[in-house]
Image (tube, rainbow, N blue to C red):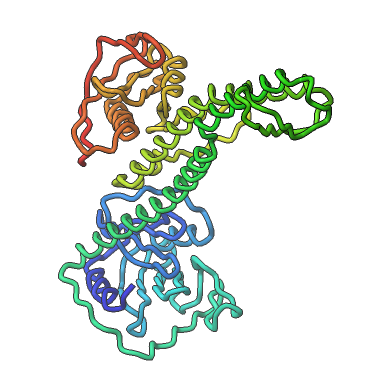
Length: 442
C-alpha cells in the first residue's frame, strides 16, 4: 500500500469517534465497524496489504485465538482518542480507551503495512505487546514481536515517498475491493482453466490414439484374403514358418507375414481369420469410442468457455463444488453434478448422460431443457420441496452454458419430471411446462 494513500486514509479516519465492533472475517482480513454503520476492512496479507470498503463481506468462520480474544476485549465499543502514522511511515496506529468497572484502559491498535513484515499488533499504553496477528522472533527480524515485550519502532525510510493525491478516499476504498475481487476472479479462472486444459489435452491424446478406420477396414479384408490364400495353398506350406511366400489367385507373388510361428498351416489360416475378426470388432466399436471422446471433448470446451465468461467468484465455486470422498457413491463420468444453494443439479454431458439423468430422476424433480432445440438435459433434485425461482434460473443458465457458446437470449423450459415422456434415447415429449429467459450477453 502506498504511503501517500495511507496518509490520506488516515485523515479520512479522523472523523470517526468510536469502534463499535471489530473481528476477523478471514485469516488475514479484519473488519472494523466505526461509529454505527461505517465498515472498513483491513487486508493484512504479507506483500498484499490494503484497506477496502464493500457492501458486505462473508465471514468465513469465528476466530477464537488469543489475538481475537484480546481484539474483542480491548476494542469492541472503544472510544477513539487518536489516529496517526508512526514516524510518518506505513504504520497506522489507533489510540483507544474503554471504560471498565474499575478503570479506563488505554490500548493501541497498530496496523503495519510493511511488506513481508505486515502485521497487526495490540499494545498497552506503555507500548508493551499484548498480542499480535503474527509473532516475530529475533531470528526473523531485529524487531521482536512477542507478548510482554516492549515494541521497538521501525527505522525511518531512507527516501521521500512520492505523493499520489486521491480525489475521493471513499471511492478509492471501494475501488480497492473491486480490484481485489477482479484479481481473485482472474486468478481462480486461470487455475481452473489450467486444470480443465489438462483434462482436455488428455482426452485429445486418447482421441488421436484411436485406430484409423480405413486402416482397420483394410486389415479386415487383407487378413481375410490372406487366410483364404493360406487354405488354398495348405499342402505347399511347411510348419513353423513365420513368413509365407505364395501366389495370389491371379498368380501375383504374395508375401504373408504371421505374428508368430505356428505348428500347422491350418493354425496359420486360423490366426489370420482371428486377426480379421478382431479388426472387424474394432471397426464396430470405433464409432462408439469416437462418439464418446468427442462428446467429452466438446463438454470440456464448453466448460472452459463457461469459466472464462464467469462474472464472479460465486459462479466458479458453483462450477467446481467440493469433492465428496466416499467409496459408496459410484461416479458417472457422463453426468456433471453441481450444487446451487444446497440443491443438487445434474447435467448430462452427452446423450448417454442425458439418458442417465432422465432415468434416475424422481417424479417431482424438475427437468430443465432449452426450448425447441437440442440441449443438455438438467435435473434439479427437489426432495419434494418447492424450488425458489432463482434456483431454476441458475440451472437454466447452466443448461445454456453447456449447450452453446453463443451470446444471445434463449428460452428454457422446465417442468416436473413426471410430465416428461421419453420417446427414444434422450428424445422426449413434455407438457404443462413453464418457460424462463436466459440472457448470456450479461
